[in-house]
Amino acid sequence: IERELAKLRDLPAITTDGCRISLKGNVEFIEEIPSLTGHGAEGIGLYRTEMLFFNRDDLPGEEEQFAHYSAVVKEVAPLPVTIRTLDVGGDKFVPDLNLDDELNPALGLRAIRLSLRKPETFRPQLRAILRASALGKVRIFFPMISGVAEIRAAKRLLEEAKLELLAEGVPFDEHIEIGIMIEIPSAVIIADLLAQEVDFFSVGTNDLIQYSLAIDRTNEHLANLYEPLHPAVLRSLKMVVDAAHAAGIDACMCGEMAGESQYLPILLGLGFDELSMNAISIPRVKEILRRCSRGEAEQLVKKALTYHTAEEIDRFLKSEITAHY
Ligand code: PEP
Ligand code: MG
Image 1 (tube, rainbow, N blue to C red):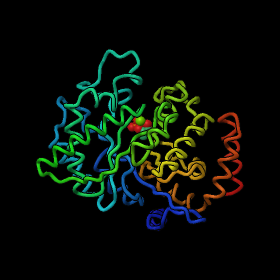
Image 2: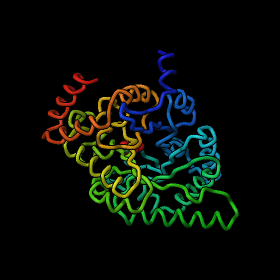
Image 3: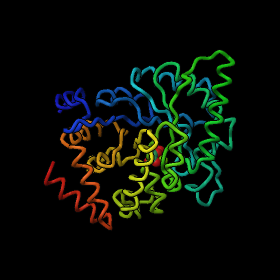
């Protein structure tokens, strides 16, 4: 198995009809990086910064964050790192930042809303990420964007941080790519408007499914209703990819769905440019990708979108997959 893995690691993630998809890793801890490259990841598609904020009495300042992000960037270089700004709240509670009297924390003051409400926390993070961008290829993206005003406000603060660094003579990548998580239904519906504001989308299916179907992602009593193949989810994914491509930007996915190999033909057929997942899922996804054709996958998606329930789509996919792969 080790030898098979190593062989696959060095093969390109390309379909039989020559379509390349970038397979990247989701990372929370710097210790995970060796496993990432060992499994053939082409960089980090989601670096979750929350871990720096958990289990401590204070908040990490700019210097601590810079030291941390630059260590990550240097370790992954020359491959790119996609750093997500703080996404706390909901299922990721930080006592110093989150409110403890919210009736619906999943719908509460969290993620980008919190960062915009607390510039004294956001600003050091933006500066630290920008400073790290001088040391390798860094992309930055924002979690839980629900509308254009939010991304514009975030970009304004990023712009301010850039001007400060410029004035201080501190190096950073002036052309750093900016993206957003697509994980709220409103963002799907206005994906065409959001696409005009950023360089890439990254779909967070963990939350997108939760908010689209109103199913708590952590509630085990509802696990059977948490359906990645719900027609509403598939239609949403299609809208997002189509809006991204119409605007000439990349459509990425970093939710768990990206690493579940049974969905790969669907994601390929929808046209995703990049999938980011747990490192250990990469070889299996790559192996299937290398046996798929994009053309056939597009036909598969067309047919899948004609079914009315997740169960029908699931049954259709399983029959196609046993027939073809
Ligand atoms: C997601 O929501 O799909 C996602 C990737 O982000 P997180 O799981 O950190 O909320
Ligand atoms: Mg999320």
